Image 1 (tube, rainbow over the protein chains, first blue to last red):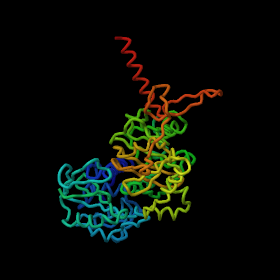
Image 2: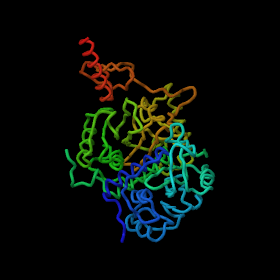
Image 3: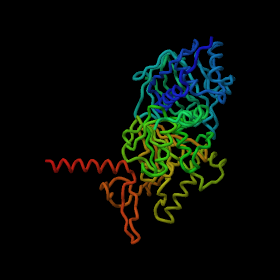
Image 4: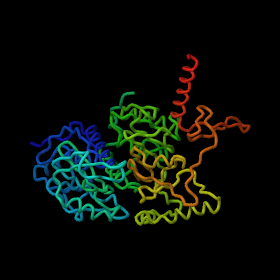
Length: 188
Length: 289
């Protein structure tokens, strides 16, 4: 049987959105989503909540989460499924595709850059990477477990494309943190 | 007033909110860049804050405390009606105290009291494009933003100096955000521009008629354009507030009669009232002692 979406679609989507907004406004700060979701495996509650909050019929989605998750996402978000290169939202529960293969927008319309939602094993603030950039007073620290080794280098190599780029939302369990394209990351 | 259940929470339907929320997230990710969005018809005319209201509606939650100001004042028509609107369609608590608010929607001012990380400032923007008086073609201004080609704006400021001896822009003074995008701060007085720089609160901008959203994330550099030999100098009337005596707040000049009488008062009514209350408490303490 299909697992349910938000119990209260209006208030739950609002509170999840505020957490995502906070995460993108203050990169590296870990936010907890009290979504109450029990999505099908392999989706974590936070991953499912982010997509339920933001994706709909207007946003083509690409994911690698398997058939059960596919049916759940199609039913609750109603988003069309597409290839990674033409998706507005890309969900990766296994190692994410190379950033160069995703939409980066154009110099005139950089907002068309994709949002990459990566499900990782764990997120912990206070140690690990050193983050700088807009939204960060001096430095935020973020430890991420479960990202492939090449991710930071891949991201750094595309830094020169700004304002084009891909924004990343990391999800683990009921927690999220975000890395907008402006954030500079140094390994701690 | 309790929430009017005939409307969806915060008036807008969920599809519209999602569309605005996606635009807001991209705006935060690209500080100062104008993101187009499908602005909806709102139950008030363009120019009354339709953009700001849609941004507030997309962000607002049941636990938020909303403050709305118009030119710094909590008690003007625009501020009162927007507060009542959200009280009715979202049932949220409203306040006039800057410190108690979690979301502050503003038209043309930034509160005097420093904002915190727990607050969001939503600006109502009539014209989001800072270059529109210099280049009317939207396709061309988009290209200028893409190339960060802002020489035209410097020429305009230079012509001000050549003609008037100083930069004669006193409101809507253009700023550079994070060293990349030229941005209109909305028609706030240039006096308020320095408050935008590295502000702990998130700043969101909504332009309803022009259908644009943009944002300045917290702690982001916002620099007012200037020249080395003509540094940015915000203007403030050389007077003190006649009600609270403040010499540091932004002042409104009020004409009091038809014989040239006038007085200066704080434009931020909450700031002024709080100072007056504090002074009365101080005086009462002094008399008691």
